[in-house]
Length: 385
Image 1 (tube, rainbow, N blue to C red):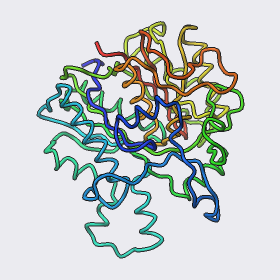
Image 2 (image 1 turned 90 degrees about the horizontal axis):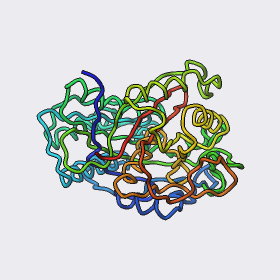
Image 3 (image 1 turned 120 degrees about the vertical axis):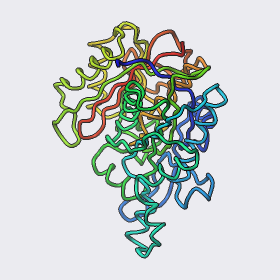
Image 4 (image 1 turned 45 degrees about the horizontal axis):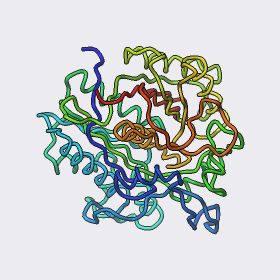
């Protein structure tokens, strides 16, 4: 069975803006970053840092950690939203969870503070446990598994869900991407790598495709989609996509771009659409020099001059394993509501850079994600039919 479009028919979100899909939408439309100045960072925990951290919240019965509560809250919101939009679960509903570092707060506590956990509490730290308990809650019986491809994990999860649906393995998929990993140790290592910026407000530090960009601000999120072919009012369609790997370097992109370029071309071929049909490139766009150069090169080589490019990271932060999922959510909500809630331009930049909140024009969106270690992924999205 070949590739066929699938619908994004429910969305749930927990981000640095707060708990809920509408909170995310309001935050994006404000044009103001989700990051706030938090204490307790740096090598000696005596520094402040600009980070888009998920605030405390959620249901305490969902677990002790923000991770467990956010994952379940986002997934429940997506399921309820899909139901309101006409979705009814099929016989086999699968669950996919994109995650790179799970339960960071609890693992940190386990290693540094208390190692004598009860067996049930220890099992709750396993990556598969949150999915198992969530399947029990809803009585879902399709496959359940994790997907991990660094910051390309959200795209990888969407494409895996589509492959399940194309193959007839499931009737529907609940997909969740979760990354709540901004403990001081993790943030410090990204700063030391020279890619994360914590000493300046995001719009000053993270300027993808503009002059003066220094890197990215870090963020957290849990974002969920219900994916199906049986819904009345979808937000957007997933037409196809592709994944590849540079096999080049642990952090750097192979700047010959053969694998990146091929991934874009394969994604368009898989979706069965020409490059001329693409109106927007929703880029990985972390604001680093090598990613800016890679994605603008692809933009100019493959797409028409009318294709606009933008990155959501100045607003939501770089949400690591959940990055491409929150960025897909912005595109899908934009199609549904007719507005692209992108960051304002703050410096001279690429002539095709979309500047601030903009009415959505006809055409497709290509969502790229270039994960650390060489993970390339591209998803092709379209407006609801």
